[in-house]
Length: 383
Image (cartoon, rainbow, N blue to C red; front, side, top):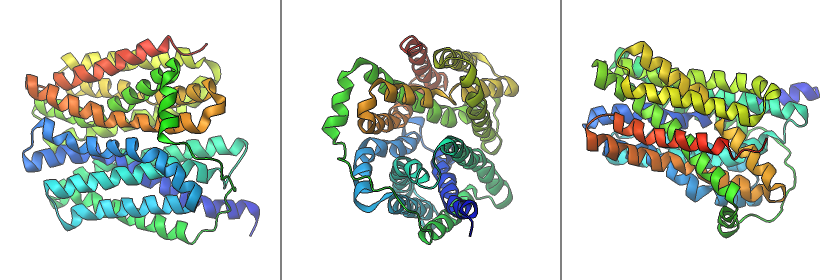
């Protein structure tokens, strides 16, 4: 087998794993259906996305240590097994407790995957091809995010069961386990010292690192918050049934995917600071519109602006933090991944806020605070 064909064979299971990484974004769609099925308040329903992203705080650094012990491929395999179990639970039993456990396992599996999959890809492709392969991997991930609400809505309409989403995604996860399990990947023997929790959190004493960490929290909070809240706004203001309102989530991920690709070319011509500022302004416009608009197309436009604007926030903050402390890349990387914990904080506060005012403008107000912070952070990005 030629070297090129051998690389493709190894890339297939890795790209399947990237697809499985996108399963975490089904949480916005699932939360709205569970809320409707179990008649939950916003505060109670928003516990579900919070449980998913809570585990990034706990698992990021231990995953790095685990990779040093068992290797990257086995760590990714473990993440896929945990993800498979998380998708099996709602099929076996559907209740508040089982969904809480399912989302917790989904978060644990995704945290393991986020930390280990990109480094594993670097063992298959390198040099100039690595960047394009990473971009393609994110595109594959985005496909899963985009189709999740479509599958759920189709299942609800055709079979009166939106949860058909879980077994369909579980089959893909199982295939990824099988294919990656039989694929031999030579890993770099990098047995450097693992970062400890203390070493990671000590970096928060650096002002730019602290601001970057908070920026990542806001980015993920807005990401998860928009997925959960956009359909609720359509239901609240237009009386739209959930099966139709859920398409707002797909609109968000469609424009987030478009933003990822176009951002690659835009950043080649404009500075990160300028593009970050423009992205933040787009989110500001979109979020402001969600306060007032009450027509379907206007709300979709707002969601699209937020999706496009939020698409390149993470890589700009992440790369800037790494360049700020080039000798502490492992610690900085672990800390930034921990920042995904923002996906826990924001939904909880948003649920309380929307219940307090008995309207989704409460949740939008919380997300607006995150957008305003990102506008402020623009001034801290180095030219």
